[in-house]
Length: 113
Length: 113
Image (cartoon, rainbow over all chains, first blue to last red; front, side):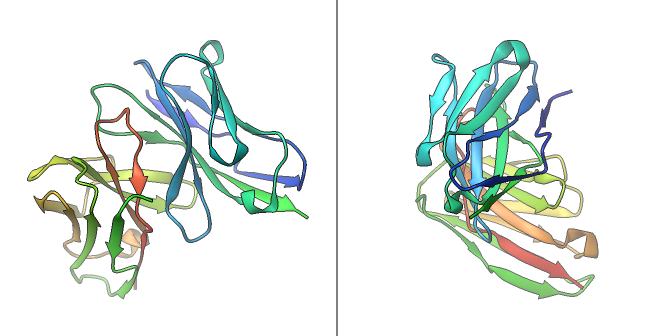
């Protein structure tokens, strides 16, 4: 079955610390992978996406993600977290010839001053 | 930011009443989606549209109907609201199919008493 798993429901880090949010997927077709961020009371905003090519993808706000096909993972990273990064983060996967994404259940990030 | 608005932004209604949520876009994108967001479930697709008058069901479509008579408008109707439909509803648009970035509206918080 197609699925996206974000194993961490909540993560707390100190401001300035590094961050890694995990995403694992199970998808029969070639996956198109996305990370979105949702600030409180807001809609989702795209951070970055991977379609093909270089497996390390750069996004907005200093985020990056690495696609590892052998591990079916697409983990999101940031070297130094800022207080404004506190939000909920969603991983999603899409594919050709399908109209829809599958979303993970999200990881809520808390940043300590 | 993509031009997507949702109305109303907040609504409280009673069980058994009909409710219609509106999504309006100014981007002329072909694809439009309705999601609901609930704690622990992430985003789940209710219905989507791949053109004017072309719609299809998502994973949680029971109790919901949609209509799209113009490119810019996608309506979600709860024929007879139930408490289980209390949720935050997001509209999204994309230019192409499931491999493309989706742009999200600000959401509608619906409470069914």
